[in-house]
Length: 394
Image 1 (cartoon, rainbow, N blue to C red):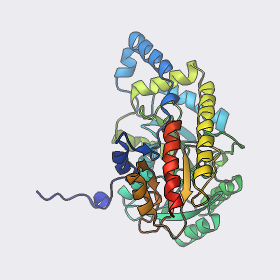
Image 2 (image 1 turned 30 degrees about the vertical axis):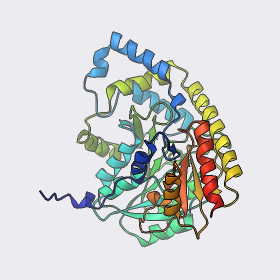
Image 3 (image 1 turned 120 degrees about the vertical axis):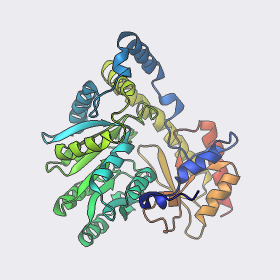
């Protein structure tokens, strides 16, 4: 039988990262391609205690249907947390629980974007979000990155010359894949431009809690006095990605439309996982756990950057990071990046080609992304030494 697919997905391709995972499944291959938390980052003992107590004392709470908006105690705890720690949440806002932050991108696009409408994105940007926007027929308008975030002159020119832009998508803190953090002045400027051109901002912040050094910068949503910013948060990098619990803070008029869209997607987020997140936040040392994660990843990040300094011999540049889980590496312009990545795979180390993160898939990239949170120190050493050997041949 010949299968005919919807126009909006017919041109979509499998995620390059997920395809690379097939190579990474080989136990002899060092995977620097994943974006997973470290295996010892999970508060497994606490989650086990909470689960056992829940199933003994109130199993129906976890096993029954829940509200689309989310488990009420978790919503209240998060509202308080967002307000106290991030200055997020105005009278016109609401907070809704989602099935991971990825669902926020899907719901926003479903609710706001008609086929042919435009979404402004950093280029490079997170492939999961880019493919979500593409799946609804959105046209992606890529804006290049500077060392301190999206280029604001290019952003203004894009806003000025396009009339179907629905929102600006940004990961301002420890961006995936580049690791770049947007400066405070650029955060303020982005907000001003969005207000001037009557465009929403979708601020994705999965890595904000994982700062190892430097000054914490205010979120763009914390500046929102006009109801033009939607904030996406997640427990994936600080409790567990497998539980799929995220949230958004948005103006109530937008939140209501996203709730309707969510009812058609999954009815509500997993109740068991929501209860676990709430109990861990409120009855365990959540702040202490975050500090533990920062110490864990700080050591791994510094170890990885030292290995890169020692092994790349000045042939491959990389961006120094202050947090997050990724390091962005840049090859000389005369080097064939896809061939380099393929050579790395053949040499038993996986990295992610930069082309996977571009808004325009026809563009050329000289970059690749590595992750340091998932591999062991021994794997990091082996993998980066292999990259160093390849670099010597450039």
